[in-house]
Image 1 (cartoon, rainbow, N blue to C red):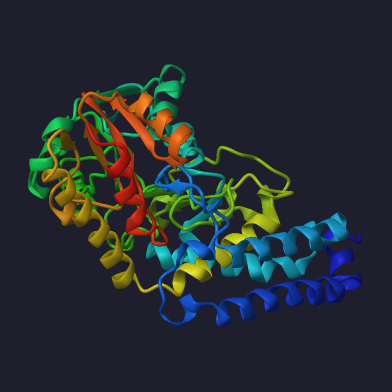
Image 2 (image 1 turned 30 degrees about the vertical axis):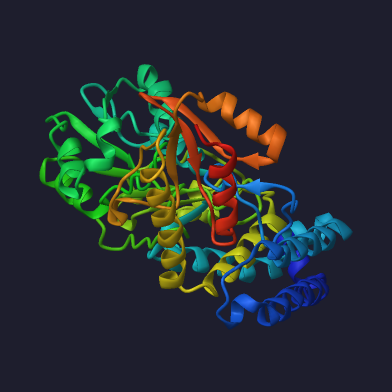
Length: 418
């Protein structure tokens, strides 16, 4: 019997391959000619941001490079020229495989361990529903955990029978904590019934970089079976090396620091841990994805143009050396920390050692509640940042990216002073 896939392969693969090859070659040529391919860090002019906007909120949602946006438009146009052909023909498979391989290189894992999802929260929903947990089992995380990595467990607990426990993290002590203290704060909370430990690689509130490997090793030594990490604020901002880390699951959202189109995610599932997870989705593709990491993806008809553009976003990021990336982030972080410490009426709520820090930090402005400060600065100065008002912190969370000029941070302090 002739299947849809075999018919497409025999009848139309050549035309599809030619159109896709053309679109891909246009991006490859544009990237090769781009200044980042010659060692220059991205600049604001490489993006579509309104030049009147001072954007200090990449930790919430990023923006994609113009060269990736142009490629994305071409993939969408190609797909819509014959949706039946371009959604299901075999020539899409090779470039989609390359996307998975590029993502795996960035996360320091194998392509066979990386599922392409919609966002970080989807990954945690999969785990909350699919791990073999029940009566007497406990999921543990701190109050620094993002709701997207906490709520799926809380929602499923009554149905699955397991227990969720959150412990208070001393957020106001974060500027003075050491790596050893961050680890110990988690490990001393572990009980015999704790089956899953969840923590952010970089937290969403003040940018604390958790010592991932030490936490995973310590949890294992205390009998924790599964370690799950929220990497939404880490991937492509700081180095990530999952192989040998002791982490079982790591979820990320490429629309932040990878600067991909929105609506895409990554979920790392360590090879040895995959068999323990029951897939959340069941699609028509389930029989032929069985035994592969793709069984954790919901797609039959998937957003292929966006996934192709994710590959291009990854290619763009690959042109930027990680040491140059970290050096830039550290330089802006240090400048901001020194500015806050030298200015009366400002208070730094983030780590004061780079080893525990990231390109995301929170500053309190005395006498100015952060929600009102955020709305006022956007209205009057087109400045965008995330107001943080929780766990005793009431400040402006600043998250500049590689293309953010220091002038944008300087502008914040000029107009936001106490």
